[in-house]
Image (cartoon, rainbow, N blue to C red):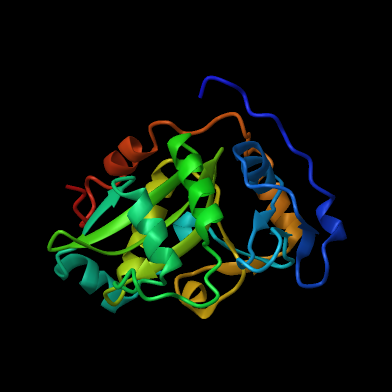
Length: 241
């Protein structure tokens, strides 16, 4: 990036409601989004709503070294013929997440929170080296993946999808292995769900979470993210090419 981002201050997260809603309105430009994440805040809203900003307490996180790989998942990783890549098709990944993995682009998905504005905003984040995608392929078809932001030593997970059983788990496990090598502190998973609990995610207080992300400097995108991702998992059982 040629220009340093301008930091956008949000209300103190202690002002969030019981369910984590902090603010409404604003915009989805680069400064606003990266600043929000660095303060432990993320957007989440439907098309018929204003932009809603959240900072829940507790917060679900996954420490990369603590990811749980079941025996069956380990077998799938070894034998399913998956190929895992990074930043090979960000647009396809975010589109699939918006469709919740379904193949037919003509079939509308009710209540998806990844509308056109969100899609465009995260494409810009990707083009500026803040947002990244992990893709899982089988027989040259995109069957799963995830995307999120890498800021400082924190990966802020946004969404994942599967078209084949365990494909999103493979994406997350592979990401964890790469992040461990790169000494990332934590993956932000935002809010609790059983899928992430099964992979080793836990809930911590918002105060603890803010302490973990305090080094997420907004003016330092990781330009070579995909290169070191491939290097980090090159010796693993999952191919990258």
